[in-house]
Image 1 (spheres, rainbow, N blue to C red):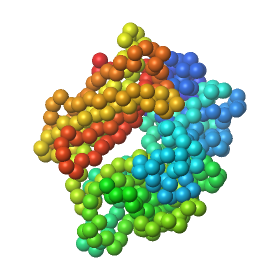
Image 2: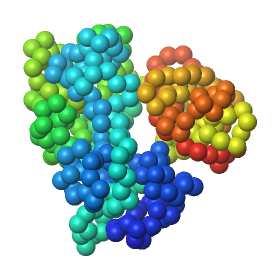
Image 3: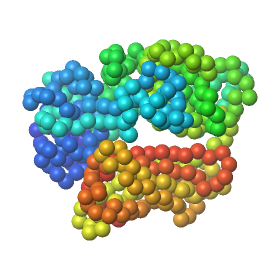
Image 4: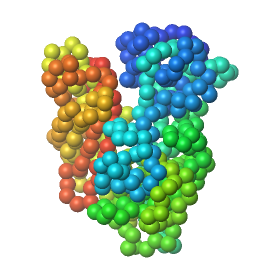
Length: 389
């Protein structure tokens, strides 16, 4: 086996090399195959499968490459009510049931196979684990959009998942129906802030999403449509023209592809961004206080007046339940184009209350009044200590 900076090449034989890519200290089979540092979007990674020997690509695909808890609905109105947070009761819960954390990754609890980190049979490309894999559909490419003079609007989402070692949506199967997600249409739901009504629209098929980004086109708009909107990307079994009349959409199939976020359409929205690559949470088992160390970088991309931010940190246990919440604030103003490294500790009381299977979610809110939007990021807890402490 050989490795690159963030890549493992087949065939895999050395757990020490895998541990180096994952940036973990443990080198046992158990440690590398169940590490919280494994990237869930990597195609070649350990998954739960009742087999001792090497897994073929088809066998991995039959388990959706380890991806679980895909939030799916058979009623678009229930999906909108749940995902927008209008009504998150069991009445509107996904068909897969209520799961606190969606788009999860099921690590192996039975057989642990070092060979899961590489393809089988091995091709001339020697594909293996890719530590920098990204979800195919990301966040909105822009925080603000403008309706053109003809009443047209294109909303576009960042596109990842192009590398052959990364899971693509068209390689996944709809959880409760068994058909390929690639045959569904990429779409978007929009809800004007402060209102319960929402709009639905679809674009190209998931399998036809272009490399520059997943998009939806809307036409016939006027300036009365301007405002702040919560949006989130989805996949739809049917094409949907831009509409707010969704009352009959009760027998299709829909998947929420990302978290909701706020954008401005013909309006200026102020936000503090979280640089997700720097967001990290560590537990230090040598610490008697059993603190959880959290580091994140806040970025003021464009607000000229300078910004501060309030950050809410939720700590989830392995079942997805919030076990503690703390609030932290910046201590200096972040100038336009500047950033701020927040280093903080969360006292978890005892080691029994803290596990590396936990996760931390951050919500950053600008500390000014007016048209502002929250920014969210999620990271898993790893064994530390933090490199910033």
